Length: 295
Image 1 (cartoon, rainbow, N blue to C red):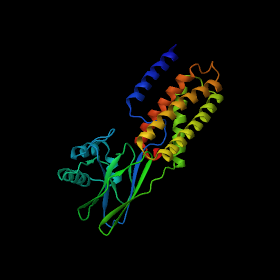
Image 2 (cartoon, one colour):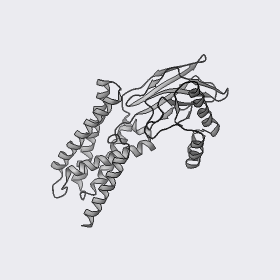
Image 3 (cartoon, rainbow, N blue to C red):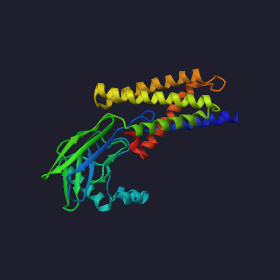
Image 4 (cartoon, rainbow, N blue to C red):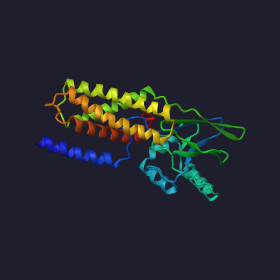
């Protein structure tokens, strides 16, 4: 009776977490934005300016935001080499652009130009690239507005003869190491949820590993085919994602119903649903911490 009460409480808490977080689906690939800069012969920094004021958890940043973040996460600034002067310079340049009639917003993600710029959690859908040449105190704003894709967007910026050229070198291919990490994360999340529904044995462990291996490969393959068939539009991506996730819940339900004896797992559908909700939450949390593995 105590075990059932604990399981019920855990399920309620899990549902609250899953339905209050901005989730995608499983631990599948998430949108990310990478910018590679070359041809800059002085100390420089790069960021992107969104064309919309807010998207997901992101919103415009100012000097106060720097002070708050510097206190909460001082190691980040030490490791990246971004100081207050650099950060505030981007804030002020964004203000100047808005006063000049440009509707652009700085979300606080900055990187030294010699490193790959990575916006790995809720990057803007449409943006312009802004580079700060620190030695000369000049800013370079891309002439065009760029749109990220549903998967990993990679832009190569080359500064030559005083002008900035941008080339899209994105690919819809999934990094094998990142895919393996996401599959492992999903298996761990669903195994832990399984502890609430059954006493694991060799059969259940094998079933969870094999089922999630197959469904995650299908998920990633299906999303890749969606991009190939419909292009990089976000509407098509999320529509296919929703359909695939529903099919995965049903497939896992039927697989567990068949492969794990009824006395051991009495509610395979509930388990499949909650296990996937758990992988939702795990994917969102880990995407914010380790964006490389979700692009």
